[in-house]
Amino acid sequence: MVRPRDTASIDAEFRDVGLEPLDAFATPADERRCRCMRCGTVRWVRLGVIRAGGIACRWCHGWTKAREFEARARPGPAARGSLGTSADSLARLCLKNLAPLTEVGDLYHPVGVVCLACGETLVTIPERGWGCDRCAQASKRAALADAERVYRENGLELVRPCRGERVPQKVRCMSCGVERRVSLDDLKRGSAPLCWTCTHGIRPDEPHRVYLFHFPSLGVMKVGLTHDRHDRRLFQHMAEGGQFVDSVVVPDRESARRLERLLKARYQSWLTADIGPKDFPQGGWTEAWSDIAPLPDLAAEAKAALCTVGT
Ligand SMILES: [Zn+2]
Ligand SMILES: [Zn+2]
Ligand SMILES: [Zn+2]
Image 1: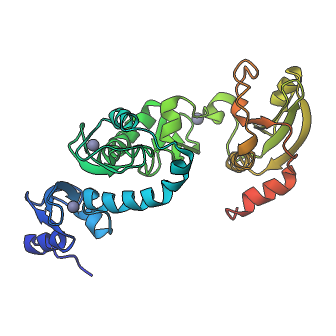
Image 2: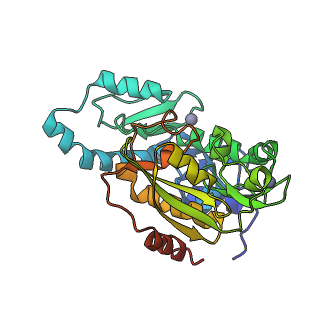
């Protein structure tokens, strides 16, 4: 269906979802100031959001959502006597830069608030810490708009426009031309892995080895990955007191990372906070879990990790 572009029919689209336009229409991606015909509050809503079936009025929608949440969540803490006080609630709102517009009760009592940063009105449950979505979306858009510059400053070129902050994006190394996946978030925190082709002459499309090491003195099992050309990394772990347990060779670096992610997810509940940089000076303490966990079958896990994505 061709979308009509004339002002009258666009205004009708706003009215159909209960919004009275206050300002002229610009583009579907721009916020338009409107008044909610149900609650009377001023909203900033994009036509794109309406067409995608998004929320027209966060105040009206917020009360419905918050009351449903309250009905489900209140009985437990009420029975334990841990509902909190209105002072607790106020402190939580303050943390999120929100000021109350309606009565403030215990932590599970919904409160209508105004965002002190952008003026949006919304409904929150202090215990949940729901903040301003309008601000969250604005900062996400700003981050994505700035993504190309951030990647470039790190010597990387986006293959396609950046679609999310935490999703690894396909990028090309501007020095060696090799493609790999790096998330904007990792890049900003400085935790994105270096280009292996530039630093070690290793291509991401050559076989890599995923290995398991046991560190009896630390009581941890560690997963790691290395390319399959030499075993320097493995000798390093032995020198640090590690015992080699098992390893499996996978077709490329991306597969190795996928297997490593799968194992970390699988052993999430055994990940240990007791070890840190002092135990693994070369890095990698986030890939270690308690050795009381059952031992993984690496070959089977590799099959699972690689089959699920059809490689
Ligand atoms: Zn409303
Ligand atoms: Zn806001
Ligand atoms: Zn490179």
